[in-house]
Structures are given as C-alpha cells and as structure tokens.
Image (cartoon, rainbow, N blue to C red; front, side):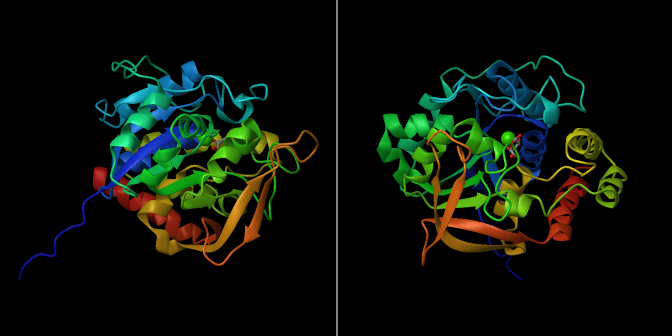
Length: 315
Ligand code: BDR
Ligand code: CA
C-alpha cells in the first residue's frame, strides 16, 4: 500500500515576551512535527526586552534548537508607559527553571525589520504568525510596510477577553493593556486572525491531576514543562485566590496543532484606546465571516492530551 503523503509542516513565526506561559508555548511549538518555527521575535512585555530575548534563546537551547533565530524587537510600547508582569512570571521572566546565558547570541537585525523582511519575501497568504505578547512588533511592521498584511495567511493571537474581560484591570487583558495602540493597529489590518482570549484560556488550567500526569512522563522536556507549570501555578495562586495558572499562550500553538478541539465564532475585534477605566478593553462584534475568529471554548482534557503526546514522543 502506498503511504499517504504527509503534509509539510506549517511555516511559523512566533512573536513573544517569555514569560512562563510563552516558554511553555515555545516548547510545544518546537516539539510539534506539524510546525516549522522559522524565527522568533521578542518584545518587551512580561519583563524587559533584554530578558524576553534571552529567555526565548534559553528555551530554544534547552529544546535542542539553538539554530532558530531569535531577534530582539521593540523595547517599549507605542505610546503608553511600559508595564511588566513579574508578579506572575518571576523577576527572570521564567520562574521555575535555572537561568543561564544561552550559547547562541541574538540573531542580527531588529525584530521589526525581520518581520518585514520575512513577510515581504513570503507568497501571498502563506505565512502563519503567532503573537503571544504585546503586539508592538507587528504593529510597527504594519505601519512601516502595510503590504506585509497580504502575506499573513493566518495570525493567531493571545489577547483580550469578552465574557471574562480583564486580568490586569476589570476590563483589560495584559497583552492588550500593555500596548492597546499596537493591538488596535493589528486588529484594524483586516488580517485573518484567530483570537485566544481569557474567555477560553481561563477554562484550560494546569490543575493538579493534569500536572501530576505530565510530571510522571519520562524525559527532561516533561520535567522542564512540569517545573514551569508548577512555578506558574504557585505565582497565580498567590495573586488570584488559590487558582491554578491558565494556559494563555500555549493555547495559540495547541490551536494550530489541533483546531478541532476548539469552538469559534466569526467577529470583528476593536480596542479601547482612549484613557479611562476601559483602556485596553477588547470589544467583539459578531459578523458573518470575520475577519477575526473568536475562540469561545476548548476541550481542556484534549488540550493536555496534545501536550502529553508530544512529550511522550520526545522521551
Ligand atoms: C498574557 O499576559 C502575559 O502575562 C502572559 O504571558 C500572556 O501572554 C495573559 O494575559
Ligand atoms: Ca505572553
């Protein structure tokens, strides 16, 4: 019997601000045979850029992928004063693993220039991009070269909230709150975008039985992931009334690997940028066909099963 041709891995650029959950996301992306992580661009967010750009390289090295280029992007948001989130990620940005200076240096070239160069060279609608931090880098790239929007076939972002509107303020989620003007530019660019918001990430948490199960898997990757999730849980519990950490950023990658375990609705997202108590709020308007797709639900057990399968294959 002739074997069916395997589909080629999806070319992927990840823009992130590691961050414990960004680190877990990078691990999943680098483990998946369905994804081809071509470049990582770092942005200031959970911790300053100097740390997010080091942390991304640390994860690449620990996953045996020091060849993935990591470019440093914007060190601050467009307009607002910078905000960080050490309370939830630790002073290093990645509490839970030993910090070291990665062997691979930062890749040459600014993250924004790199996004423009890679997207300019890509065929129309061919490139998938994940944003798991403040959207400053892609927004700057879109201002400098608006035509790159045509190359993005699918943008997947962790941002905002509707039913659950905020985690930093009653109305705003961190990634949007940290640079609402950038988020407005990105959502206004009419790119096909899937939005993983607090509505869904708060339903997928690293609860103790799931963490126990991951922790029992053999291999150093499973150990590292269990350590990261345990550290995230500890910090979340301290500030959020004993709750376990939501799988915010990992949901972007799991969505690309297993979209069938999520439900979505077509919409258009806008962002409140005027000063006031709703600053950084996302507003979701139902549409017939996008351009945005709001993820409304996920099968949390299936989500963790996807991660376990990848970790087992690596052991
Ligand atoms: C988002 O904020 C950050 O702290 C996390 O890394 C995630 O991207 C959740 O609101
Ligand atoms: Ca993040």
